[in-house]
Length: 467
Image 1 (cartoon, rainbow, N blue to C red):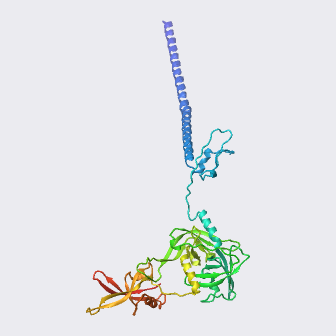
Image 2: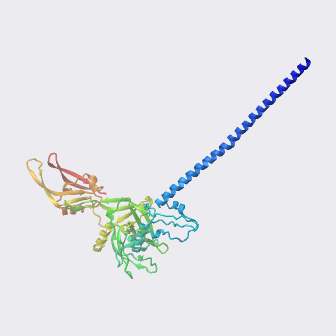
Image 3: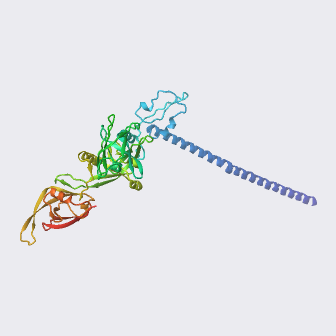
């Protein structure tokens, strides 16, 4: 009995030992599994993701390169993309250069001796976007080359009580025998009052074609004080290149213009580009037919092209190299940042008049109207309403915008019969009466205006206040 109990106890101990071993093996098995699981999640999964991303990146780059190369072959407007078909060591090949084709791309294409793949390039026209006025392009530089020989450099010397002074300016050559125009403000201090004669110790030196060793002395032929124009004359040794006239009436707002002036031997000229920033109009009193096409007159041009004192008497040029205005400079304009020029169409008219009348400072009142060339006769009812009486006057055919007449209330088709108490019997008599008044004086006009509702003429008194 005792022995069987001992066996039983040993058996129990053995069984317990076996269970313990079994449990320990299970623990080790779970540990190994968890280690394998940790290795897969921490090592293999990131490596797989990296390989997948790398494959996607390579695919995207390949597709991008293919697409860019396709674009580069179809259109050469993007020269920086041509690097896809270039090699680092260009060699002499039979591939045509751009100058031998109808394209404008300046990139060179070549192939190495080790390369057997041939590159085919398609050349197409490159369309350039022109940026104005700040990008100086070939048209502007061509215009400058065309105009600069026709601009003279002038130095004006004059003496006053404080001392002797010298000012620099420009002048436009208008004939090959030495006639030139400049601003009257350039020579005004040099001349006697109401005369073209130079004061004592005053003279004008002129340089043409940048030859500063050969200076000419200019004579003042004529001056128009009202329009700020002076006509000068030198006797050159050789024929001079003169300006080409443009049409200032065709200028439009925003058009590119060039302010050109001559200079001394340290600065052979001054050129700035800008745009037409303003066109100032008026209308001068005139006689006109009813069939005439009337419009306001351009009398001043504003531009953003920067100027200095040497631009006084210089040229405002269009992109064709044609002079469209005579530039004038004042310190007030410089402070405002807008610069002025006198339309060349006005300059031509003034220059022609100076050949007939060498000095002009006449200022006449201007209402800004065009009157009919024929006298108008009509009937009105007398004050006693018993009979009609005949009335004679002149009809208003046109009124300029912004003129004194425009703001007075005068209208087209009004009939002017009196200036104050003096009757107007003809267009000539109207101008004779009007010009007896000074600029700035008010004028009282007695006019008749037809009332369509009652089919009668009504008498009105209109006061025109001049600037």
